Length: 145
Image (tube, rainbow, N blue to C red; front, side, top):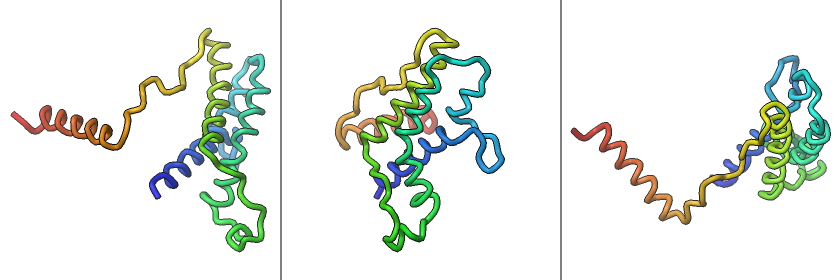
């Protein structure tokens, strides 16, 4: 259940960062707003088209299942939801990072490292060890004389 909730949360965030520049008459802070930032950034339009393509599955899930309960989907009379996979999420995030890095290279000269920069923590036991060490450090800092 936790994996499902976290996966859907990631899809909501993908949608949030890739929505249109104006939604329901309100201005939004999204990557699509980058084209309205002033100077034309070479290659950005193509990268944003790729973002739109690679995030379509998340928008479908948000619009018909997560954010709203589509009646036809609930009655099994609608077109099924677009497949949502971990690889699809990775591809969507990579497309978003490529668009952001296009702008960063244009204005800042170098890209940002959006990838994970730390090794995976291991299994659940290793995670519990890290959490226990953190609790112990807090206790040492705040609750012990």
